[in-house]
Amino acid sequence: MLSKSTPFYNVINAFNTNISIVFNLSSNIYCFAYYSMKDNYCLALNGNLSYETQYQTFAHDLKHIVTDMPNMGYFIGLDMQWENFEVQADGVIL
Image (tube, rainbow, N blue to C red; front, side, top):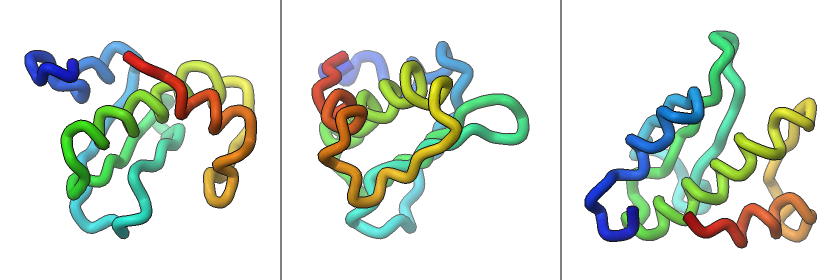
C-alpha cells in the first residue's frame, strides 16, 4: 500500500467499514472512528494530511476497529496517547 499501487481506502471495505476523507477537520485531528447505527464502522480521515500520514493513521485506527472497539463499549482518544491500546495501535505496520 505504501507504494500507492493499492489505495488503503480500498482495503478498508474488507472490514465492513466506511471511510470518508474530510477536509474541514482541525489539523490536530488526524482521524476518528465510530460504530454507526447501520451496524458498520466508519472512519473520518483528515484529507489535509500527507498520503504517508493518512496511511499510518489508517493503520492505527484499523487496529482499533479490529481489536479494541469490539471489546470496549466506547473510548475517547483525546489525551489518551499513553494508554496501552493507543501505544499498541501506534505500532501497527501494514
